[in-house]
Length: 89
Image (cartoon, rainbow, N blue to C red; front, side):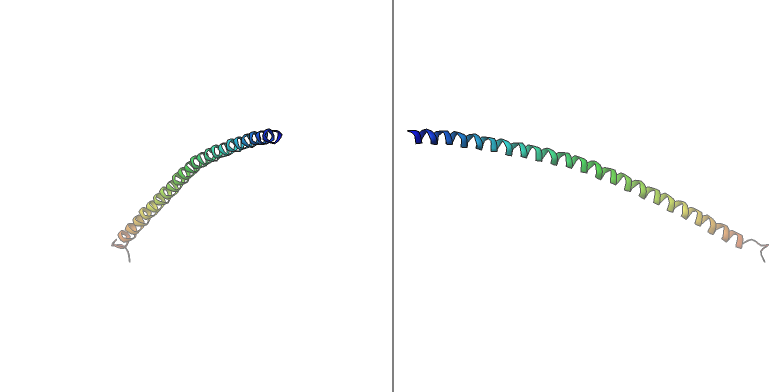
């Protein structure tokens, strides 16, 4: 009888420990998924910011190149016209 009640008590303790372990595992899964979701959101913001910055830099470079080509073309036209002038010896 004493052994039966001892095993009964030990069984209850084991069930309580098991229940606590399952609760801890569930809490860890919830925390893990929440952290993953937050990290994914932050990554999306960072990626979007990087793409916006890259786009701006490319636009600036393209405008600079366009202005340079306009200037170069204008200088070439002036040089051609100057070489065609009759007073040039």
